[in-house]
Amino acid sequence: MPYIKKEDRIKFEKMFEELPEMETKGELEYCIFRLMKRYMKNKTPNYSNLHDTTYAASHCSDEFRRRFLDARENYAKKTNGDV
Image (tube, one colour):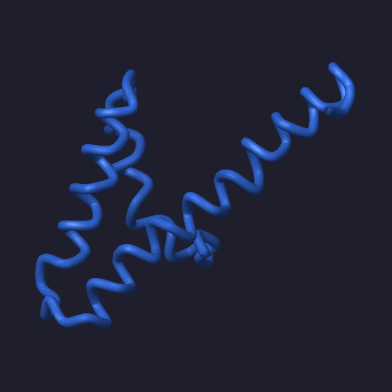
């Protein structure tokens, strides 16, 4: 998952600080796709590496859903009542 050691995060901080705001889903998808391509840049395009790349994106999606989307759904359920 995305929880790497704090000292390992340092090398990415400047990139994220300089990244402009993304305003559309398309821009977010573009950035995610470019990161995946960058990860694969110097790797052999074998099954294992391609699998790792797609599953990293999938696992991040799962974590985002768990932390944010599920919390929003639980709030709506509490506010509006269960179905």
